[in-house]
Length: 475
Length: 82
Image (cartoon, rainbow over all chains, first blue to last red):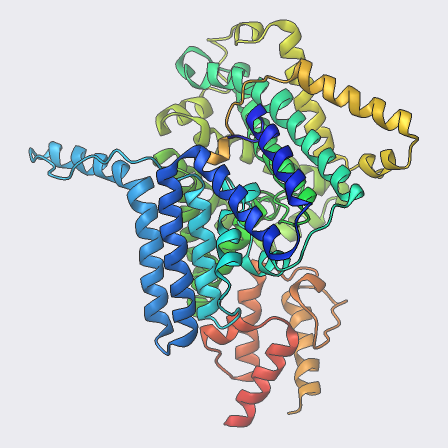
């Protein structure tokens, strides 16, 4: 049941109508029931596996809090969580690689191929579970004893499929409060949902047609075609993921629960380090808290090299978390290398850019970061590392050029896709002083409802309807 | 060395590490309040603080710092336990 489907519209409307008629514990039970139904729509088996992991983490959390052997119990809980992630997400990939290696030396691989369906949102679930247990081991947070609150946090449907990787400390307190219907909050949530749907249905899904055509037949194209496809993919990924986030934030806002924002104009970043403070913020901060920070502090006596090592490990794991395959690992390593370079040359770069006017330095660094991001994302979309490398090395090759209108979109559709790219990029680089959503609230009802009507027409007429899934849900 | 003096000396270190002369530290100052204090400069700052006060933090101690006050208290307790 994806957010951009009619099924979700019906589900959420019915769910919210009953939700606001309830109070206290009953409301929380209803929220849990809704989340269970939502999860069950994807897979009953997946729901069963997540439930088993919830029970396991509930008890390990309490155990870590009580025991003196906190490290040992934390290790046990990490083994359970990472073990589940490995079996469902990575086992077949590594097994296949292992088979290729063994076949090369003439040995048959005795390990079987597993036909398992990955439970919905497992990657996000595991990060939240590990963070929860580590916080208790560090004695920064108490274990949650209320099983209802604990389970609702993990299965909460607006963030179940693809995050944000919100911290329990942000959500637990909110689950103890009754939520009343608040007209302004609901309207604000609906506006966010509408903007998310425009990003997803009108922009991302339209761009995906060109992107799929080019990236699934990379050898047939070169030059500007590959560059446009690269740009389209970068914007598609942003529109898809941030569109999902807007819908998730909107849905959660309607229910009266604030979840973490995941984006802050990432393409306006002035360095790769800055980019990762603006893109998928909940994952970046999680990696900082639980991977980078402990490693870099542990290795702090090595000076900058200790930090470079920590960055490298962090981004390798980030790449691995995003997906199974060498393309994701390559992407993670490239980003790790770039951040390591930025760390080692921070003082030199600061001196260099001080010679320029602040505005020139800002736009130059923004452009460099933008190009780097575009090129590195090539490896996320490419089907293999060699195809990704082909794209990068054939950007200046003019031998295989074709008409833009032969890439799956007719002229009108292609121009519409370009307008979408332009709109999102303008909003990245130029932040309007007026908040359109708030400005609209103060206008007369006639104007407000006319705008809402136009937005609905845009979504229904220009959106690519069909309940296509979100990219980050695969990760 | 009392806590005020530790705070004053930390201010000098912070100004140097974050290359920001406008830094004014209070006990409740956090990373969000200091321009340049981010995930990458945090480790350099910890190394410099350890060197300056001739103390060694355990990993768990550093991870538990929620604000400058926590660091001041930790340095104070380490200096006075020697």
